[in-house]
Image (cartoon, rainbow, N blue to C red):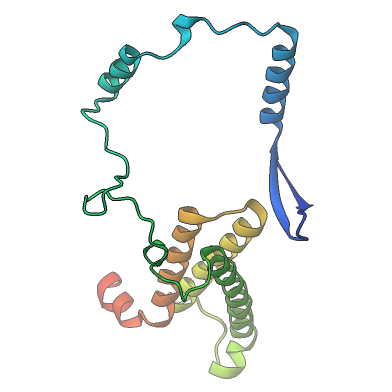
Amino acid sequence: MTDLRIAPLAGGEAFRRRSHGRSAVVLAALLFSGSLGAQQPASPSAEPTADDHRDMMQQLGIKALRPGPSGNEQAPNAANYDEAKANPYPNLPPLLTLERALFRLIAVGFLLLSLALASGVLYSEQLFGRAFQFTHKNVFAVASWVVFGALVVGRWGYGWRGRQALRWILAGTVLLLLAYLGSKFVLEVILGR
């Protein structure tokens, strides 16, 4: 069971901290068991040796290690000390700022999509003379609403980020594009009309 708490930082910002019950119990048990026994001096045989390193590389199927950064500027693996090369996009804001803005825009878009779907359900009979029907446009629009709703809940409830959030964003976008732009595609390719 995940317990989400907002804890203030020194700078006044807040962050999400997850506390897992099992992890806390295991950590407490390890700390408690470590305090019971006296510290044993490390035996010389416990130190990793070149034989251990060679054996581990053989088990993992590693033929050779990649060389580290070179001090020679002409070498292909030269160390990068040039600040201009360190950030190829100096005019863009930081990545976390862009991510925060993206999820705020998704939340606003989800609200606007909710209003559009609700007004369509409530006023479709007055506008078109027939009740709300589940055509392919409406089905894809409702499906994208569900996907974006799950994304908003996952982001702020469970802290979804990275690839997991990206998959949900792309799925919702594809469904929304099929709802608004894919009428011909759905009719001809999927339904075969």
